[in-house]
Length: 286
Image (cartoon, rainbow, N blue to C red; front, side, top):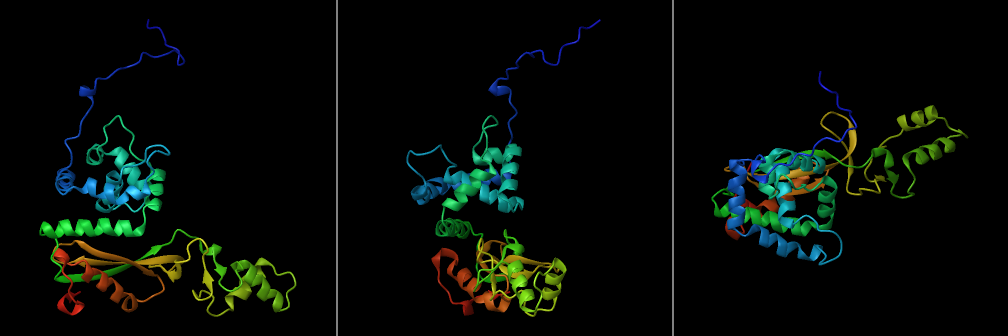
């Protein structure tokens, strides 16, 4: 008869040699990409570019710039639109760990650290890295720039519609409705009274009158499913010959495509292969 072991009894510790730990053969795409980045001196370039955003001695070690930008590339290639999702995917995949240069025994960056770095590095530096990548694509024959397609998508902002305030008085939406109801003769308006007052108003969702103090660039707009949210509009210019993204601009979600198209086209023309500068008339636009 076997003796039962108490659940609180200390279990023997297991030791596994490093040579016995499972190793990933690596994903061919990410292996080739890493080889190309190394050949072109990507890590040295981004470290020099981002040096001003890192302290020499203060604080604990942060994510190296090369790892940070590789994680952004993973988000793009894997179709992941959140920092939490990118961090989880990198921690879970042996192939992506190898791409980032992390062993199985090392902890990959979490989403909060990724967010801190993104907020620390300014937009201009991100654009410089993007331009560097486009230059490498052109050198490898993966960027033609003859036929450019422009597409736009509306993205829900990370800001609540209920937090908007009047641009002139800084009143919240409820405070504004309460004032209107009281002006109409209702001394102590109920929720039903406020709803009735709101229903009869015109232009109640005007971006000229309302703004979210936490995200002033977000605009009140209708999403594709018909719901109204605070949103941004992202426009992409794509090289139709190769599928490479040539330019990305963020526009007001309340602006029409014909209004914002010119800025995106101008940005795409400025990112032409081999540093050429052509006028929009010399390119085909889809």
